[in-house]
Amino acid sequence: MQINTGKGTISLAVAIAIWSVSAVVSLPGLAVSPIMGDLNKIFPRVSNLEIQMLTSIPSVLIIPFILLSGRLSVARNKIALLRVGLAIFFLSGAACVFSRTMTQLIAASCVLGIGAGIVIPLSTGLVVDYFTGDSRVRQLGISSAVNNLTLVLATAFTGYLAGVDWHLPFLVYTLPAVTLALTAWLRRIPPAPEPPQSDQFRQTRINRGRLAGLMGIYFFITFAVLVITFYTSFLVEEYKFSNSFSGLVISLFFLAIMAPGLFLNPLIKYLGRNLNVVSLAMMAAGLLITGCIRNEAAMIAGAMMAGLGYGIMQPLIYDKTAIISPPQTSTLSLSFVMSVNYLAVLVCPFIIDLFGRIFHMSHDNRFPFVINAVLTAFFAVWAYVKRDDFTIGMDESYVTDDKSRS
Image 1 (cartoon, one colour):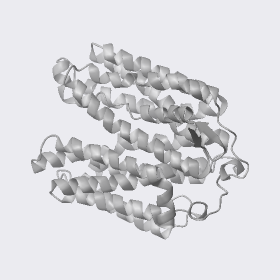
Image 2 (cartoon, rainbow, N blue to C red):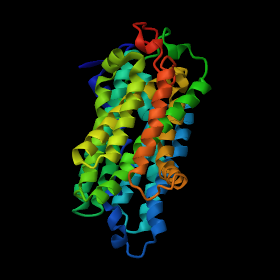
Image 3 (cartoon, rainbow, N blue to C red):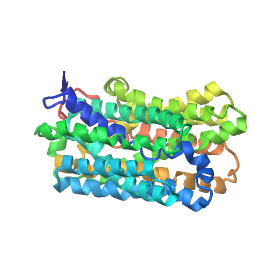
Image 4 (cartoon, rainbow, N blue to C red):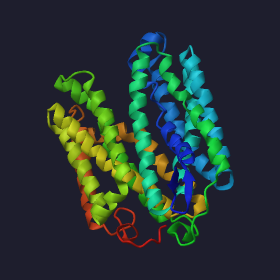
């Protein structure tokens, strides 16, 4: 079976190798989540600071190594760089499995953050290198779908393993070994050159203004929907719903993010310039429903609506980032954009807390959903006004039949 790339074809084996890289980048942090509540029992002498370090330091390390990987990708062999990152990821994951003290776990998790940081921009950079035009949009959607599906399945898997032994969830961190083996296909079949007629090929340097705009948009939409993963459990506890219900809501949220990636090109053709407006409106409505309607079905529907909106915009931001960069620096541009995703994860609780203090709503569990819904609604209005703009809207390269992008 051959996969169309927009500049030729590649085998299914090469496509699977590319998709497998997208799968492993969702793994950092998953093994810790199901044992967080038991860490004080597992390690009775650890302090709260050490527990916080286990969850926060790896995420902090991911950001600079995403940027470093993007910079190295300009002058280095990307497949060799990918293999180094995967090897570090796998070895540190194996070290987590055999760790016996909190210090060992923290050290191994930090090294894992370094490996993940190297791999993350290359996961999308490979799609950009191998595909172009509509084929690239389609593959970026599939890449996003693979990422989020892996997140859901791995979360369920680690939760089950945590009930057997607390070491076992860390086995998910050894999955990069599979991807490492599959990179042999990527070494054998390099990407074809970008066609001279594509917008990307015509770029002589990174468009820094548009890059900054895309970074800002990606930061905002990620920050907006993160309240579902951070604050749903508090609402569920307040409403006296089942303890497992918050996990269900969050899992369905990630599944909803996955879905649009499989149908991205038809959505672009159907909604045209209003695509981002509709996406942001769905996010705003979904957040409001999730936070304000005390009903299990409504919370699920709201979370999925927000996830669908985010799932449409994320791969499009990646595609636009590729378009504004020459082929040799596309991964560097992507590293800047992808780093703000992890920055949003780190600062979201602090921003929400600040808003809560300003509006004297710190103890209202609905407030994070309401404030982000309002902010997203304002953002949707701006997107409507600027719907012909390349960065926040959908310009003619997406909504006409002009093939200059491919």
